[in-house]
Length: 493
Ligand code: SF4
Image (cartoon, rainbow, N blue to C red; front, side, top):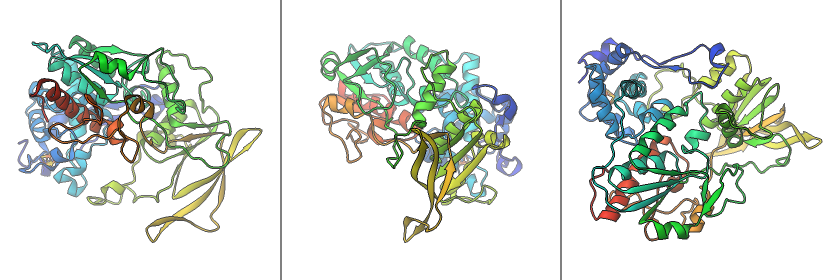
């Protein structure tokens, strides 16, 4: 283990941020990772618990006590080997994962879990800097061909596992670049897209072929996502040409708010704004791009995507940014110790909230429901809302609490419903009650859909979830596909 008395001697240290004034001038990452010496001290805080709850709390079951100990001993080379043994892309999770491992950490009883995410971030950045992340092409090819539909984190993790198992893998992606929501949903200031590009190069060197701008089946008619595809292939073509097909198309159907006034100009899904901004950041041209400059912006939805809209609107130069959340306000962070089982209710304040608040722009409203969009001459001018409260386990409106709020731009960030159903329908795959691909997660033989040799994983199977869950599903589905093709598999569970 790290240092026997480490957790008693050393305090948790958070990663630093660039000053707000500097980071608002660009869309660049601004987190300042731990130095090797700081990471060593943080690794020393790990108790190497006999039953490491952190490992169980991590969806990919990272072997956390081991890499904490290796960082404490400054054995970075072996630390990345341990980290990569369970996670294909720790540079993604080390930046944007909400770290359920830390919520599960035993030391979290005092509210000061081991800083596992910052240690993970330090390990993988060091590994790339040192040149330790290299292609690992399979020594023996199997002659089997696998098509992966969707180049998000689940598809990329599966592609890497299957290519390393010796299969010829082709990833079909409807956008011009792979990455899924990592590429076009997560703002650059949270994760630079160069991290995806260099992984793509690694995967290509391992034999993975990427076919971008290709839609499988037909483009969904009701999709609000811009269609960038230039080519289409049919489900029948894929089934005929490949020995197995894995569907990892994500869940990008945004939840709508069908109330009076919804058709007014100036109301957009978050997933219209965020992808546009990322495209522009990388030199892309977007016709009639959504802008928040000088506008009173209201973001409906209090989660991470809503927070990303706050950060983007602040960078645009909004006149004000108000974020609505229908659920009541959780306890303040100062109310320590705020530990299990209360931690999921903790009031989370993101870096985007901090930036907007420092500029005097931000207002966060909880327990508020939007009743109507108001407008003039076809354009949004405001919202009519009502307060809500829990009564007998139900959210009910508070009589007489109606309010009107001024708005020139409204961004809907209320999560996602189900996957792009046209892909599932083109394969004829059975859906579950939520509209996702129906497939089990059995340790052996799981991830199979109702259609022979077609598998499904990630958000397309489990519904909207975390990137780390997508990576887990991609890895496990790869094992299932490998076993299906070869009769046996050595890929990890
Ligand atoms: Fe270390 Fe926390 Fe995991 Fe225990 S639960 S092994 S202290 S990281």
